[in-house]
Length: 356
Image 1 (cartoon, rainbow, N blue to C red):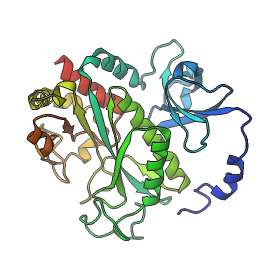
Image 2: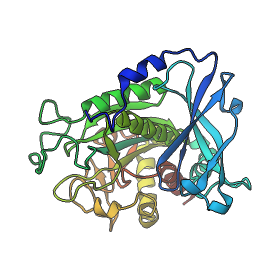
Image 3: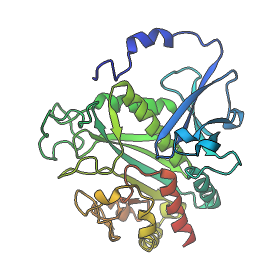
Image 4: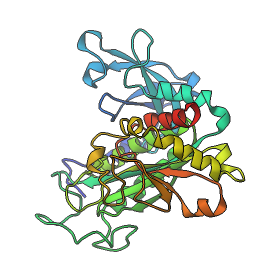
């Protein structure tokens, strides 16, 4: 664990966390900033909200988050979803909020706005998403967490879903994050150590429509907060380390009502055909620096072309073996990078499947 300069002092904090709040509720407003990261600030409420409609609109200085110029910096926060707060407990909450400009238009970094419209338009398709979020841990000195000083661990092989000293690093953070997600009400469905040591994955979903982006963003926020307490930095870069090491992705699983029905494999194959025709448009919103990851090596397809196959982790889109056998279910788009905005990814997938 990191020293006291970078990690919180839990012993000193505990006595304050036990103090009575005198009926007040702390609402931590979380939003996505201009660099595809999360920001937050807290507001005191004196009535427990039953829905987002009970929550007040708020604002912040958008010039300090890359979302507005200094001469017109007010950006407004409109509550979109509520989660329980695992850090403060009690009736305290986390509020996922949308960003709007002073004239009432959605901020240019508010990709949730358009995604929500698409999901509402095609709600009869009952589209579900599941996202596999990979990430990498670094220490306070900028070194991959747990790696030997001035050197490297052994080659990839024993680390994926690994167990034991020298194979797994940072499990405390992973376990704490998992519990925090469950407490908050995030639809987290699992975790595992990844192929590169100190790289992990958590899965969120299945979530219908717009809820996919909501739950993934809050899961990311919780991860950053948990890691902050351990003095660990989380990287969502798709190729955090050059060399013969796996990159980090956000594999996106997709299923519609038609795909889940008897004979749904035909709908899956039709969907993949549609995706193949818009490969460049999808890659454009599938994460920055993704070309460093999609090389055709390390369980990826080449960014230059589209491919698909059954049980093929070197393809752009994979049909799981179980789905091919049962003839229905879902497909996995393996192209999205770990630093995607899930609203952009789920939005363009819905747009491609239902409008082309």
